[in-house]
Image 1 (cartoon, rainbow, N blue to C red):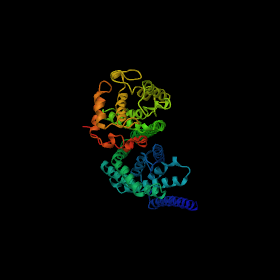
Image 2: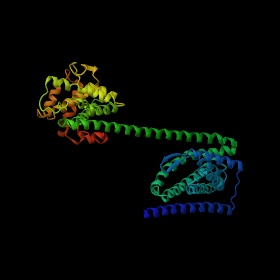
Image 3: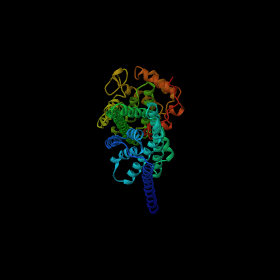
Image 4: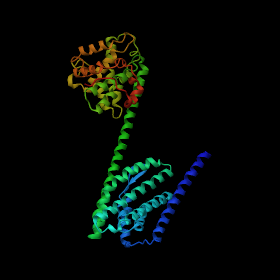
Length: 458
């Protein structure tokens, strides 16, 4: 605790010292300019107008990253630097940050001093071309020189600030700022050149024709970033809801597996097989996720069956089979009570329907059966046949596939069986047996990490 407190004191001391150095440099730089005969020649109303424009533009800053903001406040700063000189530019640059005045004041001193310094050196750079400002070409060269010097000094000072505050790396921040700042110089430098030329040659009021659209464009950019951030947040919320749904389904399956130890893992395997069939059929990503989730909970109705029925070591009697067949309807009733599971409840109800209409519970046939239910029927039957039971051994994959093929159009959808056969033809042995790591319940909770089997999609 003592070392932590000391480190915080050292960090605070570093930041305050850096703020004091920047403030000293800004004041000294202004004093040197005054000492060499530099004066403030711009009319007070012009300086106030430029300062207000810069202040408004700065309030509309757009966060490009955690440590990087972008605004068009550089336009009035460079306008003042080229047309009037470094002192006017320093005033406009410093005024742009008056809206940030408040605690912590150290932060405000750092950014204001840095902005004044970058504006001042931009004015000095532009002054080197003062003899050529009469022509538009010379004016444009002066603007480019001022813009480049302002950008480079801004990159250096801001990167130092980030490093001193230990909120990022100097090199990484400088690289990010350089990509953003230097790439925009060719875009706004001609605009400032036209601004100054029209102001000087036509009328001071023509400035409004450029500043207003520039600020409006920045506002649109701000709205764009806000919408993009909102979309990102919505995507994150949807991802959390999806994971919550998978966790809920996993909990239901765990309850079923705890009761029926002979079929433990069956639901996870059916979910994987069904998802891969849906992908093979070219169904949208949403349907693939839907069939995966439905596969996890397709047998949840078995928790409502009488005790001893699932655990019976031999074949079921006719009456017991009729009771067993109620599990799909029971599953629907359970899932229909869960918010947002209405579609899945319907799919689960019909996963034992047959193409010829002899299935249960409703005797649907053909296309009356939801496609996802038809997919589940094939995946369910295959895994059931290739899994061992107390009263029989597991069938080899080739035998189970042959039985699926024999039951097309009577029990199973031909297209679904064909898609599944295409998957199984080139799948690994562990995938054929439903025994790979992909089939674990832990993998189902994180489907984005599932390793797909080696299947051919040709």
